[in-house]
Length: 336
Ligand code: PHE
Image 1 (tube, protein in one colour):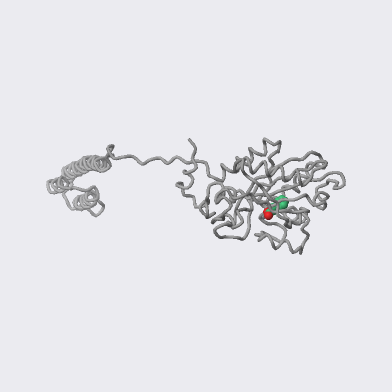
Image 2: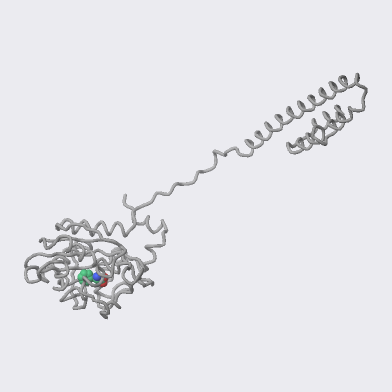
């Protein structure tokens, strides 16, 4: 038994096989155990001698198995190391360096321009109440102009803000009729809209100025200055009469299209003008809701789309390019 066992163990190649032999020779139903069990039938004087031999055999087999196990384990580790050697001559993976998103670049530029004119930056929540998004802005329930904004409602009273104008209402309320008030408010807004020029999430920068003797001329002058800083000295702006419930009079503001130089192109209309924002003189009801006295102060407000300005500035014709997460898009705008 001993010699066959040792022979077999020597020949084993895999650890799992060793386990089987352990059971076969030493296990409860194994061969050696069988012999030990049979000892009852031996003469009493023979028992210790046979017993001793059996124990020695057992120990030898055990030792053989242990030694072989150690050898095989070592071999396993060696094989593994062999397989896993790293080929240091392979070219490495390049780590991609990011860049500021064009929307971030343009938003910061807008902020810089208005900060240089003494505006303060304030922010408001993206999840808004019906009151600030509509009612405080002179849009009572059932007002038809609510249809202009394709609102995502969360509950009857809570919604994703459709514009940054609620920050006007919030700031007036907080400042409690202090003048002058000069703020811009950049941020995300949401509308049920999705095509080449509309995204369900986009960015606006709101502007609000309240002081004594503010006129439409101040609004136009401010926007002209902004357009020149943003798009170049040659820029002109024009105000087209329009309607917003929170401003009176209201205007849509166009800049002269520098891309196609007045001839019309995919981005600008045939007239050579392109709309960049909505604006107007703050409606007396909005001033009142914000705690200001419309007989004493006036204000102007505007709201511009950051995507729109970015697309114009960089000649991007599909808004989805700005949201596809493709590093190749972003990298074109990397600076030095
Ligand atoms: N809130 C308007 C919009 O999102 C833009 C606007 C802002 C118009 C302020 C007038 C004054 O379309």
